[in-house]
Image (cartoon, rainbow, N blue to C red; front, side):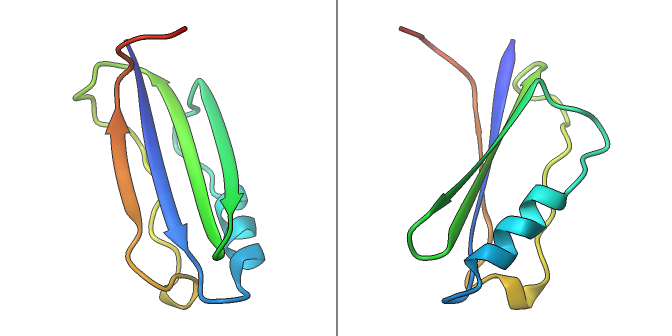
Length: 85
């Protein structure tokens, strides 16, 4: 089964590039099947990691960045696929 972990954070205004660099530099203790990194308006950064694991498996997640790099708590979600086109 494939599991997708999503991690999303918002930087203080103007600090999005720093948060993006921080996210890109994070090394996980295990290598996911795939890792995608996105940026969005309002200095937001989204990281999706894909894992070959059961839905309830304990998987490594990105940590919280330093408090000065985020303007609100990090959001995390776990998804499992149900259909693909």
